[in-house]
Image (cartoon, rainbow, N blue to C red; front, side):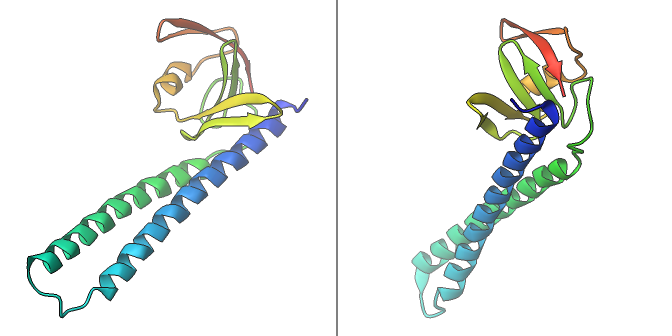
Length: 153
């Protein structure tokens, strides 16, 4: 079995991969929209042409907003010191509870390591807010379920 620092490194790596893939996907979408717009010929006339350009512009704006949000999430990941040992649940902590295991970094969903399930959560998520500042032995009532903090790394 891996120790807490090794688990945190793996979870950090998985979260970093997740956000890097998200950024890459959004960037590809932006590139595709830009290419489509440049391929749009000036000879097209009428409402159909204008509607197409407007739709592409909206797609580009939407993707740009998504890209900026993803880059902010990446900045959050870059603030984490994976070698820091935590005794309180905070950004970068691995919190082992009786009803789940939580890596407080970014909302990346379920991650499996050695057949054990971990949830990548952000400090701003509902469970992240509840766990922030907790110590080993503390309890939180989350959606009517009592969760006990067993370990923090």
